[in-house]
Length: 115
Image (cartoon, rainbow, N blue to C red):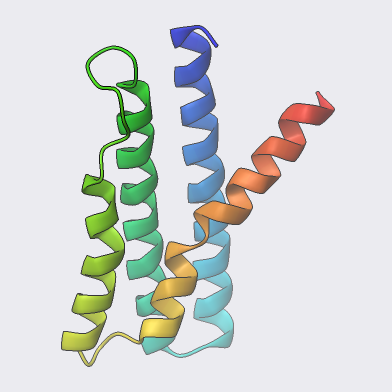
């Protein structure tokens, strides 16, 4: 796709991920305790950062690099290390928050193929 179209796709995916994360965090705040909600929020924020770094790395393909950068792989490692060190965070909700970008990608793909 042309650069403008790719930038628009990136923005739609980020907005879908942000929206799904906000919905999940709001639901968690209603039905679960503060520890679970904070962990989900932490994971969702790291998931957004991961997705942004991945998108930036993919955008550089062909221009200045021949392979996708591995720097974004530090984000899941950081998630596990921080949740292991901080008693205020739980690993499972944080991982679920981190993985919220995946359903957002699926929803965005389904939306794109229908239109």
